[in-house]
Image (cartoon, rainbow, N blue to C red; front, side, top):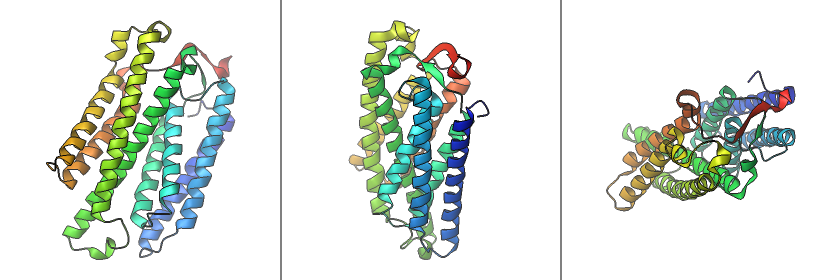
Length: 292
């Protein structure tokens, strides 16, 4: 993160600080016996989202391209999409535990973004093609949908555990009922499955047409560690949906499978780049924009 331009560094640190403040507000509203601070949270998350949009705008100006090619940029865009989802849903789902889990997950992803932050690099020419843009956007939406499904899964398990312990005071009026959480979980998984399907199709099309520009053969692209993990996650989501729709899988089982898929997607996004040396990137092998 120290390699970021000063302007990007300051904006990112400020946005992260705002998200930390929002997370603290969530803790305080839980301690305050459920007194909801919706306007405060909405304002904080809204400010953080605007700061992240500004960060991506500066990054786009510096590289003269859509800022979707680097891992840091993709994760920041994910937090923006997820933050906007929260802002819209917070007006209809007025529950303190929903606020808290959503904000805490956003903060987690922001901290992950900070751990992989890097100075802007010039993207390959292929990054501006419709295939690449469609691939990037649909995959981000798929990950955002899975993240929301995971948030509902965590809430479901938390609520079920409290109800089993007959701790009704900390459930009633403080989180959505279990049936609603199940529905939001399964619908989010369906959106995730749909978006990742389109993402894989556009990615395969891009690799098939532009394998030379990517600097890797089509076969090697398909067997990249990140691609294999994404296919596994896509399959897990599909199996979970089928089992749930066939009434073979109960809410608790679906919640655990959803959280498992979320952990896998985090590793697919970050872990493969750090530990597996994935070739799934659109960055030019040249120097960064700071060095040019």
